[in-house]
Image (cartoon, rainbow, N blue to C red):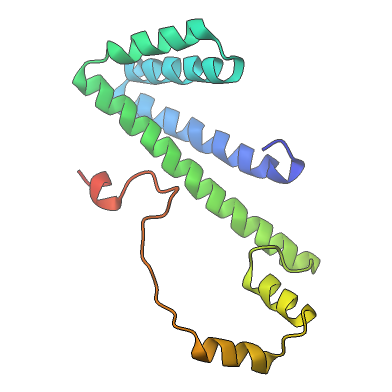
Length: 156
């Protein structure tokens, strides 16, 4: 996520993370906020630098959590994941709008792109209509693979 087109997404995620941190501090206190921040920083250090001391420190912190603290930490990181997903959805909409305004060719993975490719391959609108008229299409409803938790779980 280093490209300039993704800078607004990075800024949104940082902003939402700061808001979440302020909310945790206001609602649960400085101690809980500091615990979450320590876990976050230690995790980042471990993952970015492959720091084995940070890994051990993270394990020690997580294994020492009492049930109440564990729930608070899990909840905060779950909320952050949801906020990041929302920011990504918003960024996708922002990028789609940008491409539409710029008059860009249809992006890969879109229906417009598929129709454009079909036309370039020599398929007419009548060909596509005949294909879809004969197709057996059944929707399959599944959980979205990036969904952190189901809504029913969030309400508990």
